[in-house]
Each structure stands twice: as structure tokens, then as C-alpha cells.
Amino acid sequence: MTILGIESSCDETSAAVMRDGALRSNVVSSQYFHAEHGGVVPELASRAHLTAILPIVREALGEAAVTVQELDAVAATQGPGLIGSLLVGLNLGKALAVGLGIPFLPVNHIEAHLFSTFLQDPHPSFPFLALAVSGGHTLLVRIDDVGAYTLLGGTIDDAAGEAFDKVGKMLGLGFPGGPAIDRLAVEGNPDALAFPRPLLDSGDDRFSFSGLKTSVLYHLRGRARNGVLELHANEIADICASFQRAVVDVLAGKLLRAAHREGIRDIAVVGGVSANRELQLRLRHEAEQRGLRVFIPDLLLSTDNAAMVARLAALKLERHAHGTLDAPAFARLGTTLFSTDNVGR
Image (tube, rainbow, N blue to C red; front, side, top):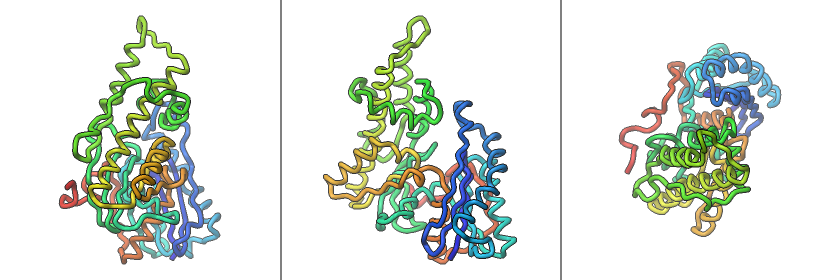
């Protein structure tokens, strides 16, 4: 079976081709111009997708040496994400499917991230726990099979990725903030500043990073003199290291406790923040000590990409899923992925 996946939920246009379970191509085009605005501008993002989507699809098909007539199904991200961006990929996917007379599978963006580790071998075995740290989402999910998910907990305010971006902006590091903070943290002292670890010992699986972000803001205000903030390079590195350590303590601590409580051996960390080096090192070390297996996708597969869309579509088709054209775009996660019976414990 040959599947074309399309991803256009935010600021990355991507297309991928999967044939008989093997990834044949994964073309990603990032919209770097958003950095000059300090964040993603929805209208500019959707216009950029319109310009890029057809060349990206053609490139993915060419790289895979596949013609559109050889496609057996098309899948595209339905949401959550920016509505204007989603509509570009979603409508192209539907049009291709109708024109070719093949099934169209709408894919949940977060659900696709949950299975991004299935693009590599080895991958987790069911059941496994997944920590999704992607953009505005920080979720801890128990996965018993494709389509069988229990949301153990999520963020009640800022997600981890949002906190990285906002702290990065405070420090003048540009957008996105995560990679810059990760890079500078290596040069800093993670014990230099005692930032809080919100909800670390709350006894549940909820996350909160708004207070941590505010603590960084108050620290910077305290360093200002006559309204002017001047920081030496070593001070910025210490702030980055201390902030990052606090985030990693919370993410790793919550995930590992949940794995112990659920009696699950395999854990996955997915989404853009999964590329954070300190988080990866901490989890790999702790997993070795506790007899757990940790799975983290490669960098290109951790950010938004169409390969994970195609992979999830393939998994669903293997389980006899049916295509549908009745698939509107949606901006928020809501309850589209987790039924009310599968939220919390």
C-alpha cells in the first residue's frame, strides 16, 4: 500500500510517501520568516502554505519515485492547529483523493506525534506511555493500541514549548526559544537560580509552566536598573540552564512516576521539545537505572512532519479504517482524541 501524507498545521509544510510500511520520502519546508515577528503569524503562515504545498508534494512523490496514479490513499492533518494552515493541506488531500478515487484519511496532529516513534526500529510495544510536548500541548497519555488512549494529564496553562518560547523572547533569543535555550544552557550553571518546579509533587499527572515562566520574568525585573536590563553572557547562560533544569525535572519526574504507577516498561517522548538534549540525557539515564525502554524520534521526526501523518494513516488502514471526506479542520484538541471515558484515572 502506498500512502501520501500531508502536514500543514502551523509553520511547516510537509509531504511524505510511505510504501508497504517503509518511508520513501519526507520533505519538510519550514517558514523561518516568522522569527522576525517573534512568533507565528497565522495569515502569513497560511499564505506560505498555499505557495509551498504543491511543490512540496511533487518533490515528495519524485523523491519516492511514485506517481499519483500509484497512490492507494491520501492522509492530511485535520487539527489541532491554525485553521488557515490546516485548510490548505486538508483540502488538497481531499481533492487528490476524490480525483484519484482513493480513500482520504483525516489525521489528528497530536495523535500522529504519539506514533512518530513508529517510524523507526525499534519502536514501543503496547501498552506504552507517551509524553507529548508539542507547541501548545503537554500531554501524558497511556496508549494501549491505535485508537485506544487514556489521557492521564495535560497542562492547565502554558505548555512546556510555550514556556521555552516566552522565556527565549524575554532573553532576546528570538523565536523559537527552545533550541537557543538548549544551546546556551550547556554553558550555564543549572543550580545558579532556584526556579520553581510547578506541580512536581502534586500527586497527579497535570502540568503547569506559567508560574515558572513568571518566575523568570520577576528575576529579570529584579536585575533591571532604572528600567534597563543588561545581562552578561554568563548570566543569560545561567538563566537558561536553571530554567531548563526546572522544566526537565517536571517532565521527567511526572513521566517516570506515571510509568511506575501504570506498570509500563516502554515510554516515548514526542513533539518538538523531545529534541531537548538535557531531557533526552535525563530520561535515557533514568530508564537504564529503572529497567525501562525510552523511545525518542530523530530530530526531523520530532517536529511537525508528514511522515508521522502517513505512518498513522498506515496503522489505521491496517486496522481496517475507512476514509471519509467529512472532516472539518479544528483549531483545538478538545475531546476529539480522548473520549470522556478515557480522561484521567
